[in-house]
Length: 188
Image (tube, rainbow, N blue to C red; front, side, top):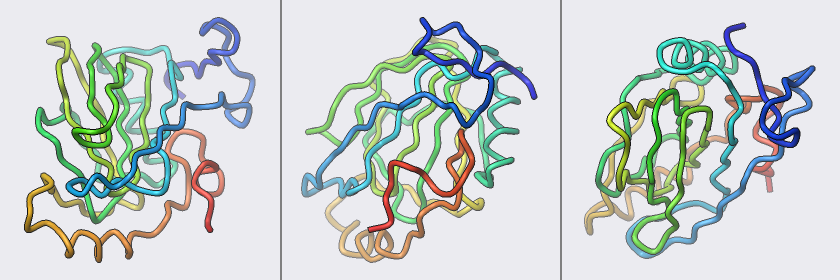
């Protein structure tokens, strides 16, 4: 395995003995704002969960996500406009630099992310890059390699987006921790 998984509970530097002893993530909830549907499931934000940076970190993220069946991956950044995906959930692993993201649409929340952080965005969750370092780099992937669409919260996006969202299955595994589904996304 490339990289070391970290526990921020121990000042952000103590390697975990087991991935199963994973840290508690931040959970961010966003309601439908009339433009961006968001989700009843929270955005899951894992902070500082790996130590590698740059290309080694990107490779580590791609391998980790793939091992947990989150594929169809890419490397790039985050679009500088509000958008969401109605056909898939998405994971974003920050492998270099830092950024300020707006999550949940115009009425959402600004979140700062940096290399070592991973965000799991439920389908329908708005996201936008507000600013970033010049070296900001992200690996993105989708459960079971699902295809994704790109919606900007335009008037004509819904109700088709709402129909799509109702059909998106829950992931079989957490892209970071593995295991059965995403613990913070209950089935009911």
